Amino acid sequence: MYYPIFIYYNCFGPSDNEIPSLKSYDIEDRILGGDGIFNDDLGTCSVGFWARQQPNQNFIATAGHCHAPRSYYLITWNSTPTALIGRMKNYFKEPIDFGLINIENSDVQPVPSVRNTDSALYKQLFIKDIIPVSSNGAHLCLSGVKSHVICGYVLALNGFTTTERYFRDNIFIASLRSKQGDIGGSIFSYKNLMDVSLNGILTGGLRNFNNNINSIIGVITISSILKQVKNLEVVTAP
Image (cartoon, rainbow, N blue to C red; front, side, top):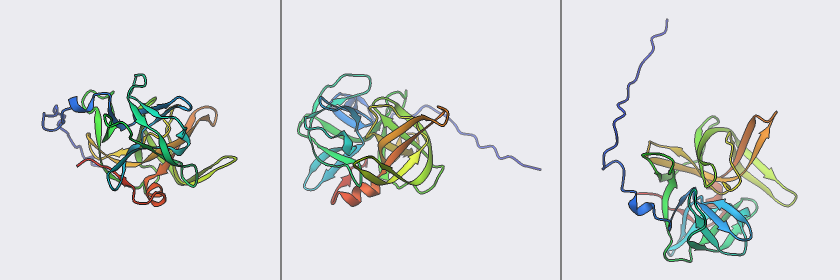
């Protein structure tokens, strides 16, 4: 005989103290994880996170194969290119797929959050820490300029990708269906309704295989990024 345990939650509306004012974060020159970045030579990719190197050098982190010579512009969700950000001067295409866009416009301000504008209440999710994914089946989500926020599960921890020119390892695989333009976007897991842990950034995806019903993505781990790029810091929310 089974004795089920019922747990009840009170779903009260959040108070003003629980949701920080979004007014200062909704202007177009604020950059959040999952926003878009546009380059005339390349097209659109997505923002992974706000990165910093001392002394006070700030960058937008994304995938390295999003590199192109010209400057990048910010694209918030459902918009067109707006503010100038800067150029990607440092990037890797192997053994990791990672790049840093210099913030050359003083009117642009990165924010240690993930965009979730489609939500009625939690329009930004605060990045509180970075945590490696340690088990298959873990629940995680993507924020990207095309897909917005979607979620799935970890399928494999030790993946790799290869092309005619590049080999990349330290990738984990998840059951998500990304869209073109999401590359570089934030991969995260929820701590609560407002706070998240950053787990990695999107490097690519494979859609509609196995009789057109399955899709997967590859994720660059934060640990492999920090190992490759010395003295790099992921900026988190207090």
